[in-house]
Image 1 (cartoon, rainbow, N blue to C red):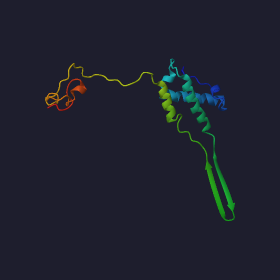
Image 2 (tube, rainbow, N blue to C red):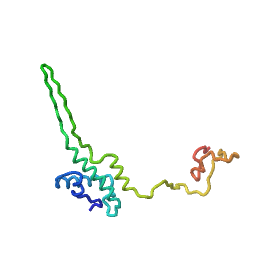
Image 3 (tube, one colour):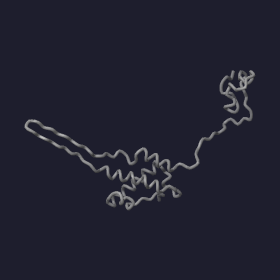
Image 4 (cartoon, rainbow, N blue to C red):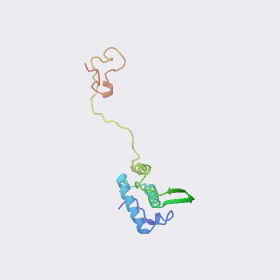
Length: 157
């Protein structure tokens, strides 16, 4: 059972969609959304209202994409013909726009995030190269031992 619940009645204030069609569209939208944002299927998902709003917008856009048509107007005067074609059909390329995918993925991010580091060279003191500036009386390290926390990065000879 998905944490995000969407029923055909959630769509009725915005569009009149047959119930069977609405149920199928909701199932498809939930399935595709679960592939880009798996957290929406978890029982402890807390941002259900935001996810429902994103899904509702995508479903309503999908419903409207079938509207429109191809219109051709022809005018004839004596030996002259003029023809104009208007195409206002909307093609469906994907369920969600990239911005909606990003919004769904943002809903899955945890509140705690940030930079971190892992010390892979656990040495207590830095071992500087023989030609390091510190060994020659300078106040700075030129071999990179301070960066690694252990052995020099360069100038090892």
